[in-house]
Image (tube, rainbow, N blue to C red; front, side):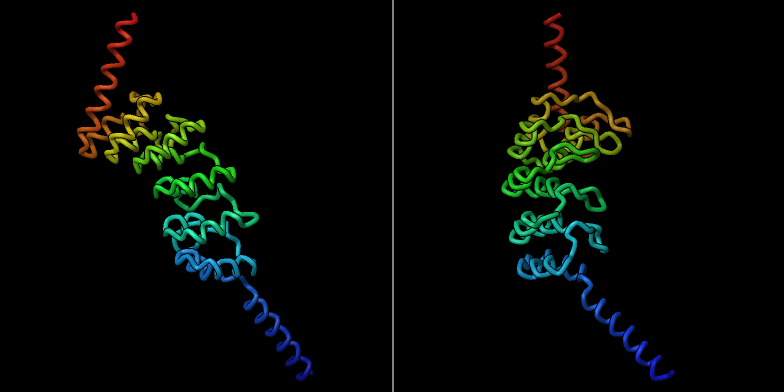
Length: 223
């Protein structure tokens, strides 16, 4: 009986060990992504690592990590990986397209859009991030693809408010010229000009105020 029990225990331990050895190394996967170790990432993907699962430390998905840490070889590898979710979000809501826009990575933006990444999402959008970074070419690309110029993020923050808060004067001008409504208010009750004032960006606030005054004068002449 004891001999049989020892054999049973040994068999169970062997199965457990095999399962542990076969388990995908998610933590190692994210480290490999961050340092642009394309060969290591390729092997771990082959071994069954899920690229759409956020890492436990920061809650970021692999595509976002690759873009954030300038791991360009790994980004291209992930983009060609069957089953990778372009709309997967990190814990803070970031998508790959948002991070690419914020990091001024036009080639990555183009590649993501070519693969079908969506410009408009609920909550924060890629236009918010491009506006915050002041990247006019990427903003123009998103607007040409139908990005909602007054998209509401949580607490009703628009891309114009985001750009104003960050002091991105040219981005503010582009959004206003593209039809952004400067009279909208966030859940805090602030307009874009008030965001600029609170962030000590008086030049941006002046741009918005002048635009609104000119619009009011133009409407008065038409009437």
